[in-house]
Every structure is written in structure tokens, then in C-alpha cells.
Image (cartoon, rainbow, N blue to C red; front, side):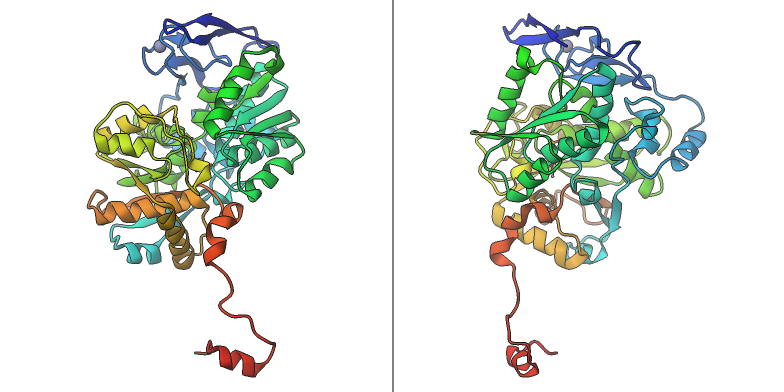
Length: 442
Ligand SMILES: *Cc1c(COP(=O)(O)O)cnc(C)c1O
Ligand SMILES: [Zn+2]
């Protein structure tokens, strides 16, 4: 399968209409009606395209959403499977999606974090949405599950991606389960836990000598090359579908709070896709009457060593200037975030903010969450918890309001971040005397 390419006004190669999908018959992606341009609103048929042929703006999925009684829809959702497919009526997936072989991510725990709240001085209710509980231990299983359905619909045979680590593992696992070939690309210098997770499912794993942004540029070139024919890059040519998976975080958080929108949500920002789609999901819930309309604030969290969006927010800029990442939060190390400007819009429109913390604060926050709530987060979770603390101290986040903080990954994949400062309190001989001498009895 090939994607036709034309010249955009800016002289950049832009994929236009997809060629006829290899799969026969019309594309069935449930309530997904079309792709629409986020900049100019131009609509396109559903296909493996991601940029507007008119203005080069990013495309997103437009829906014919269910109309009618919100209570009936709520009941239908609540009676659905205990994973993201309970929200199938709101996602670009066929109605029988739950019957297909996939990893069934989602419905992860929303942990009421009272001990963390006390440490941070939050009195209005603090919750951690713990997405380390997904099948490959990061939130990426959500977005990949949706992209897999698009790949099936468009007749792709190989699944691929450019990844900061977690995505590669999620694609490898989903491909294995769904019976696709996979070939994924990562920066060569990722954490061992991420590399092993990406390789163990048996697909091809390619380390690229460069940053994530180099990997991503390489993948964009591969899509335009005959070598990439028949390949579904979940976060490039399937990006409009992939992004929709993050809406399920919004749906779950609200359902788990008794169908209510929290006042404040703190979300990590790499490309910014997750944050923008959580906002999209909240707006859909309001529109459908599944939750009451109320104001909410969205906060973006970055690591100081890769904080282009936070920088732009603080400087009052609309444009995000790319940076070269240097941080232990490698899953968030995207120096040129595709959705950066939309993150700025949402933070400003909702009255939120974008903030960053340094690597030392990331490690402190990982340990704080671990010792207060028994949740071992990866560095991205250290970023959100650390930023939450900083935003409370600066008065930008209101501790008297209900707040949800996302932990998007598992600490076991980023052991190196805490290993140098974490270990046994003592190593002793197996004797009572030695234990007494260690002074640990209380
Ligand atoms: C990919 C990722 C994110 C956020 O990604 P976006 O590109 O901003 O959607 C957050 N946390 C973890 C652990 C990730 O792997
Ligand atoms: Zn457009």
C-alpha cells in the first residue's frame, strides 16, 4: 500500500488521499465518520493520513457520536468490559472490537492518595491515576490498541513506531497478540528495562544513533519510501487514531469519580498528544451529557532538561522552540513536540499551567509517591508528582480542589533513576546480635 504525496504550500511533502485500503469493503471504525483538520476544519475520508492537504495541519477523528438518553449510554458503558472497550461507542473502533485478539488495556486504578495529599497539603481530594497497571506497564497500551484497529481496517501487515521507549514495547506486544509483524525504532541509548521490553515480544527492534526527534524524522522518511509500504506507524500515519486512545483516560477518571470531572488534572507532556486528547475526551463527555458541565484546569508537566512547552508557557509564547533533550525522564524526551502549541492553548484556556522540575526533583517525587502510596512510578510519574508539588508551592494549583495526577508508567522500567540512591538499609550476618548492632529494632 502506498500513500500519495503532493507538495504543500510550504513545499513539504504532504500525504493526501489514501489509496484504496487493501482490506476489501468500506472502512468500519464504528462512530468515526471522517478525519478533520484541526487548523482549517477540512474533512477527509478515513484513511492512513495525518496531515491536511490544504494547510498541513494535523488531522483528528471526527465522529457521529451517539445521540439520545445519556443515562442509557452510561448504563451501556458500565455494563461493558473491564477495559477501554467499554467506551467503544466513543472510539474509532468497530463495534465488535472486544472480540478481536488484543491486549485489552485500561480501567486502571484511580488511587485515592490521602497520605500523599497530606504531604503535599492537598485538602480537596488527591487521586493518582495509575497507568502502570496496563499490559505493558505504561499508558501507551491505550493508544496502540486503537491504532491496531485502524491498521486492521486499512490492511497494514507491519506495525511500526518511533518511540521514546514505552511505545516500542506496547507495539511489540500488541503486534504479537494481534498477529502483525512489527518493526519499531528507538533512540539507541534508552534504559535497559525499556529495551528489553521492546525486544522480548519477538518483533524487530532497531536502535537509531540519535535523539527521539531524529528517530521520528527517519520514520517520516520511511513512510514516503517504498521500503515502508504496508507499514502502519502507530504514531505517524496512524496518529489521528492513536491519539484517540488517550481519551479513555478522561473517560475512566470521570467514571471512577462517579461521572464527575475533577477540578484539576496534572498530565505529563512528551509530544503533547495525551494532554490534548484528555481535554477532547472531557469535552465529549460534557457534550454527550454523561457528566455535568463544569470548569476544569489542565496542567502540563515536563522535565527541566526537555521543557520546550513549559518554557513557551512561561514566556507567554504561542510557538514552541525545539530543544535538545537532556533528562532522566526519557519517556518524555521529545525536543520538538508535535502537539506543543495545542497544549499551550489548553493550559491557557482552562486556567492551568505548564511547569517543569529538574532530575533531582523527579527522583525525590518518585520516592515520595512510593513511600506514601506504595506506587513505584517511572520517571514520567516523578515528573507529574514533582510538578504538582511545585504548582502547589507557587499557588498555581489550588490544594482545596479535587486533583488527579497521572502516573503513566512503571518504575521497574527506569530502575537506574533511583538505584544510585536506593538500596538496603544494612547488610548483616544472619544473627540476632548483628541485627541488634545495626540498630534497626524499634
Ligand atoms: C509517551 C508517554 C507519555 C506522553 O506522551 P505524549 O507524546 O505527550 O502523548 C507520558 N508518559 C509516558 C510514560 C509515556 O511513555
Ligand atoms: Zn487544514
